[in-house]
Image (cartoon, rainbow over all chains, first blue to last red; front, top):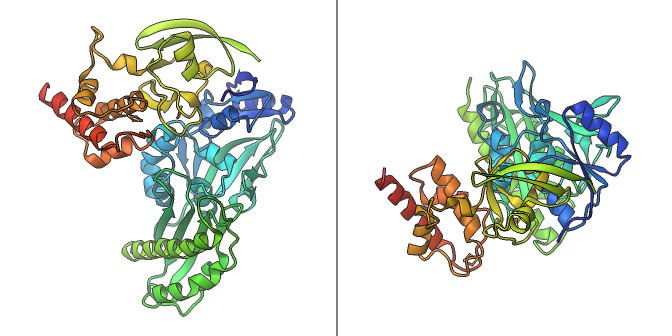
Length: 298
Length: 160
Ligand code: FES
Ligand code: FES
């Protein structure tokens, strides 16, 4: 399996990369960590005319913290994220999810931007971006735009990112540390490091009395894109669910709410199985998040 | 297809070459430099047989272009032996613990285990599993490989 011929250019700046992409007229591909693109080239599922290598652009690597958000540059390696104290402290959900992403060799090259741009419906990083209301920055040679994760993913391996645009960074809004927040992440896969059959991410905020005041629940592998389970979030946020009844209420509500999901049946699992484990994984993620939030009294 | 001049250091020896853009680092090492210790398995980033160290970090050479190794330090399995060409401590431990059968996965296993031992002189079985998690072996069942890495770590610690 050898890739079809292509030209190669090494971009030295974001501007240069976007210029190459514009000149490629839709036939250029961005080479970041290469953990998805290189296999697709060798299987000839991708046949770009030119590869724009962005690995040498220093502005595309690093994690920055400001008053309102954590900004992660697109070409930051997954290993760097996993080892980052900023990620561990402010984005524990991302840190948890990253342990499920591939293996150390692939994380040493694989980038956060690459996972988002590839948009596999079962991959962990898009799921976390969706659960945490991240915003994704895209640059074009003449303009740039910032897209909420809820609008970024269009379908399996499809996003709003145009072939002439470069994904430059992702912004995760900071949660106020005074609130009682907890997160949970669970997934089921055939082997550790494989793409998930189903993955579930939860972020729960409790008030002083232990009632849920905010909830974000997202599932991967149950539709063409990762999905937010808004009905479940609403149920969690609705008044009357106290600390003590939260868990049993959840247990009753989940199967009914998950009826709305549209997973596929394939050689790995049936749609029905995916739905059933989605309910279980969502419950486990919510439970972990609640337990953690209870312990996090400011 | 564009071609490019590269200068790359492999096992501390510098090579200059001209490569076509689509040639992977894996093919370059094997076909141009005749370093056939690095194995070709799946060629799409799944099996780990092609693992090498890229500036000291374990990565898959089938998922890198040869051009991307320009001005980089590469270590292949050939670079893990002693200066006189005899097997290094880790390689010897693989023989002694019967950690290979067909040997196809072995170069990748050695690279992953070597990178682990550089960071961690006394890894637990779980840490070893994590480090070789991206290397598939169809023969051994992995147990002897884990034992070999433990044996090597013990010998390395004793020799210090
Ligand atoms: S040949 Fe590179 S991972 Fe299989
Ligand atoms: S020894 Fe045969 S594949 Fe590992």
